[in-house]
Amino acid sequence: MSLVQFLFSFEGRVRRLHFWLFFLVLGFIYGGLFWQLGHWHVDHGMRYGGPFGPAGYWGFTGFVTNPVFDVFAIAAIWMKLAVLVKRWHDRDKSGWFVLVVLIPFIGWLWQFIECGFLDGTPGPNRYGPSPKGRGVSPAAVF
View 1 (tube, rainbow, N blue to C red):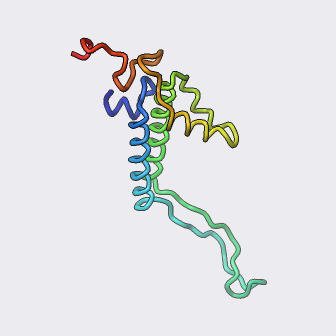
View 2 (tube, helix red, strand yellow):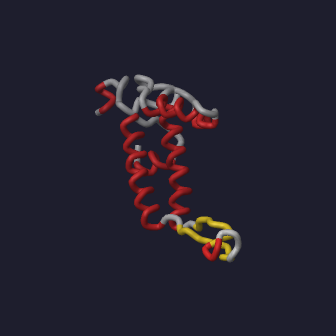
View 3 (cartoon, rainbow, N blue to C red):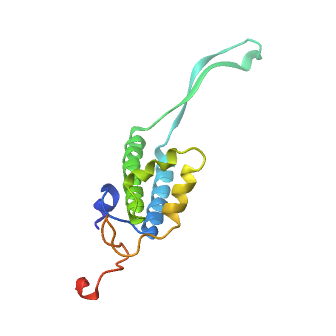
């Protein structure tokens, strides 16, 4: 599987090792971009001398994002979904299981355990051959 297929395709299977490495690398990239290009703090409001004295403040405090960071964040969402779907496929489950995180309180834990710690189906399944190469005859490799 090529890197482009790994990051953007929803077909096939992914090993736990590659799943963890992907999220580790993505976390470092995401953190570095956020640190360099992330969100800027913006204040909208006015000062007044009301009950809080001369330092009183009324208004809205918010964040404005950097467009470069936003484009990366959208691409990262697609890549995360693609890798998660392939990880569910390795467990011989439909990619729609990514929606399990919508179950309150336990959904995220279910996905974390199932995709992060449980081994995939040994040998081929309905989503493709084993990403570990198990269940393949030695003659098929050459």
